[in-house]
Image (cartoon, rainbow, N blue to C red; front, side, top):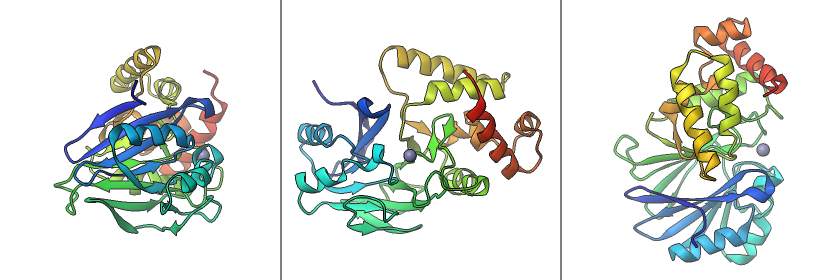
Length: 272
Ligand SMILES: [Zn+2]
């Protein structure tokens, strides 16, 4: 039986590989179809990624770490031994076995694909989202983004090492300015619970209600809710909707950055 679920685009392919034993985590294998080279994203269970790569007959040349938390980076040491010469990319000195430290706007190639690093501090100080395009012109390319624990479908990560204005910048200014059709692959399968909260915030939002039903059906079938898209998140994710009147009313704040902070605090206290 093959490992995970496959999302086939024309020039790239993404294997979604769950690592459920460590908390509904997603690992990903991103493949450049033409060169058969691949990157492993947050491969916390290396043997599953190794198996997926063998099935795809691809060579893993890069490991992309979104952030230093162990449920994302604890596989790095083992990966460096399994794949000699592996480039281990990250934006934080706390990431194990890192060989290439990147910052905001840094670009490198994976075969024919272009990877752009987006520094999105807040969940952790060195958090990086990886935006991948199949063409040097983003408008012409197939685009995907790996968002780690910054953006979840219908929600966002805890502000462990940052402030509401940093999450505002990450979600609204950085990720929110990517093309709407960009496919989004997040760090954890929290979609159903996130959307239950979103439905509480916006009871009259039909898109949220529809997506919640869809996500519950998939969850019951043991399937994944990835990928989402930037355009869809703008419609259903309260943390990407902090400028909307309804969100201001819900939080009793007018400044979108204050809405962001209050919304996070209210979600932390929300009982499902
Ligand atoms: Zn984390």
